[in-house]
Image (cartoon, rainbow, N blue to C red; front, side, top):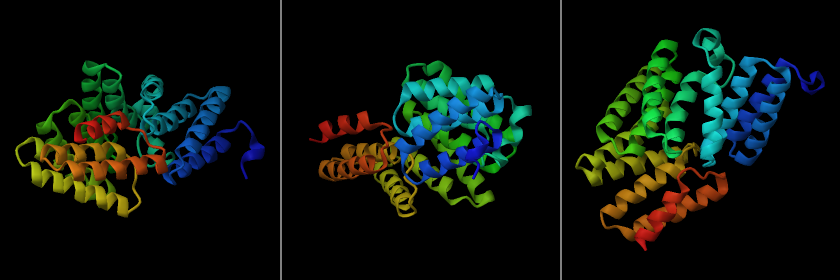
Length: 271
């Protein structure tokens, strides 16, 4: 319906929601194409808020596809464009969360993967600070889950446990089941590193199965490597291999490549 408008903010908004639906439905290549279209349209229109949301779309899809360089570049664009006073209300229009929180949270993992560990740590903390300033529960939940992911990546179980607890608290107050499962996953990983390997692995796998049952496939290639690593550490190599096969199939079906190199490393170790 909005197509006849051409390069118009209302057409952009419709296209943005089409990108989000495409990505959530599991068509990540299609979502990538739509994100590229949004970036081109926003550049033609020249509006800073539209440029921010166009890069928001592209960094979100690129993260799941394992495109670290693309994710980092778009996050950097988003960080440069974002202004809390100007964009505080964006969560009500675009994706029900704050783009600045998302940029900082996503950026922590992407910058760490790209080799900028010191900067990544500061950005992870900034995501939580910004989430508290925005005063929007789902945005704060995003800040905590990305901070939790970053803690896992750098091997910091105490920090991961703290972020998981904070995320679980926000989810309980706002009744958000999907982020609550992410809190269970992050907390389970922390438990494996803090001396209870079996209990933590079971907790992670319960969260993993729950997300799959509810058709929430985001980040599952990353989560699968965490569970497989725990199984391998317990000497359950055959179980680890079976899980890695399942995660590989999920990757093919969903076009997710997040942490796929680690999947191949773990498969070699298990073999």
